[in-house]
Length: 307
Image (cartoon, rainbow, N blue to C red):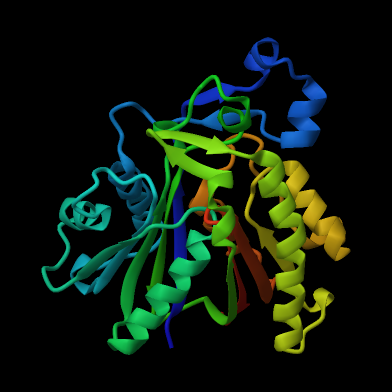
């Protein structure tokens, strides 16, 4: 049995305040606090690339748990903003960490649903190959592709990276997944000419329509009720999005988490950042994580605490 043993994150210290941009974009304090819910966004240093963020997350992981790097059998990096078009960013991470030459390395090109997809992929890959230790990284620094004059994106997205240690000594295991894609709407969130473009209204409509429905179907499939889940970890798109989904599902405020006001929407890193903070909270035995966004894609997973 393999599952999540530990998680660590790296969020750059540099911040850009949305309050300092109120006049530029014609927004109010209320819009910042209650609508987007992002007071400032984290921004990587110009010298940092996606692989560098991964390495810093790994160093934070080493502060939590002893890791024999020679025992790592697979490295996966979830990113849509790699260091280069080729080689794959996981190869760069592999080299910088000086991992075994017998270690598999590959990338997954997914955004906000990427952590959930990545969990399913790395667990399946490890089980199929009888592996016992792997690393799942997420790193999507959107500052590389954001137009600072685009109100729809620059006020929301922050830079971060995470690493999840998957091993045969887990504190969490995954039970059931569900996935979905509406590829015909892919242009609603797209990077063209190295610049991110987002139709915020369309993404909001997609999430409000598809996410509650997919969660309800997943719970029904495994014969669980909404209240059987101790904590819901939605992708942190914005305060409006998270609270809207919670309201549609009829969740009490203690059932879900919102926590991006000081760093922003970190894309594939948003769920593992939340899950990292859940690890000390041993009372939460069942967690449902839901990622959704670029693609348009969505992915849900039920996570069970085992220790």
